[in-house]
Length: 113
Length: 112
Image (tube, rainbow over all chains, first blue to last red):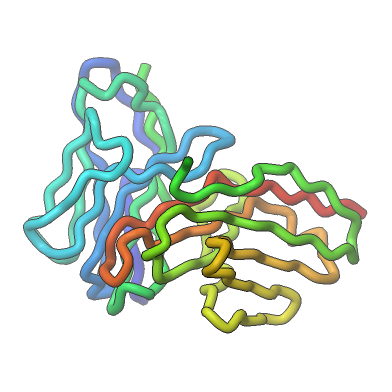
């Protein structure tokens, strides 16, 4: 079955450590997105990529970095510069056209103490 | 003004009621619109796309008003299982994949 896989589901880190969240899709979608959700809040866009080797900052990119070396993969690194990294992180993809809906992975809950 | 804005509610309605949510957007070049449903601690799931002429899927009706720059979602004959957070999504990128922006979500609780 086609879909988006995020791993791990739960992640615990100490403050000051960088951590990388995995996102893989086998839907052959061109565009991929990373969102962050805090309790009781909507989704805020961190980064998105419309094509391999290209990505754009979203609304809250500070303290995060991404890469898009393969169409299937869009990993997100939460760096130690991110002041409040504890959140629910959602990866999504869309295609084959710009008016296609987003498909989401199951999310990663990151807790930094 | 936020790019995409929703009334956060919460909306508390009895079973069988009709309830409507609105979502306003600021970028007049936006071309695609969606409603998603999110259950507690889960990922959002697509409820329906919103088409220019309006569209219906069972008890759910979506409308687009380009002149006033809002979309709406109408739920008829509410069920207990409709309790969730409803999120609107707008493609602010116009005619490209662009920046898909979410509203903050509207919480719906349907009670017996």
